[in-house]
Image 1: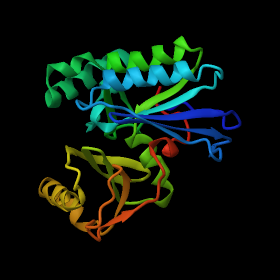
Image 2 (image 1 turned 90 degrees about the horizontal axis):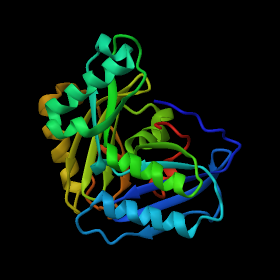
Image 3 (image 1 turned 180 degrees about the vertical axis):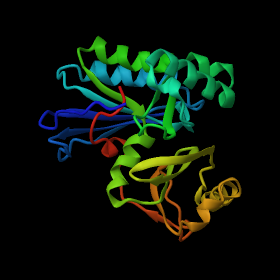
Length: 262
């Protein structure tokens, strides 16, 4: 689940969301000054097909440079869960069958058409897994290839969001996007549990309600006093509960540091 970018090389980091494409150029792992951009997308149904068409259009207009891409996708297009350990994970073919059975149990038979991947956790430990519609994943890869670009990674935005704060070793974090809220706990440098749901534009009050609802199923949350908050919603709130501590971030593209899920 990891592909390390050669840091000395320039990479265009993109974040594709229902209503916008964010990008920034990184060189030696750092954003290049004045390289960030944002392309608004008219997409009332939050369709990934419409967003993918916008990505193709941007690549067409910026085809003069063939810099590699690192792409993150909005959470609404990525299903994530922590799956229990199984010996089936030790073999690629059996791992796919096991992961598909785990996702189908939660998301239904439609999950069998998704591309699935899990992180490389220690032997015997639960693993963080992600499912992305195979057509979306292939569409991004094809769009990059059509313009002579190498796609270093395609991953859910939760990945770079977590890596951007992992060094501070938070016990939990919240990721807010337009219409989507993800809560996660972490330990030993890894995400250990997840809760994902939709949310309204006035998500400030919903944060605390979501945390308390999750707490009913996960009593261990009682021991967590602070939750790092990454806001990519574009709608700042004045009523964020004290438990949630904002982390400054310019955009989803700025969170991308290295290619991590190809």
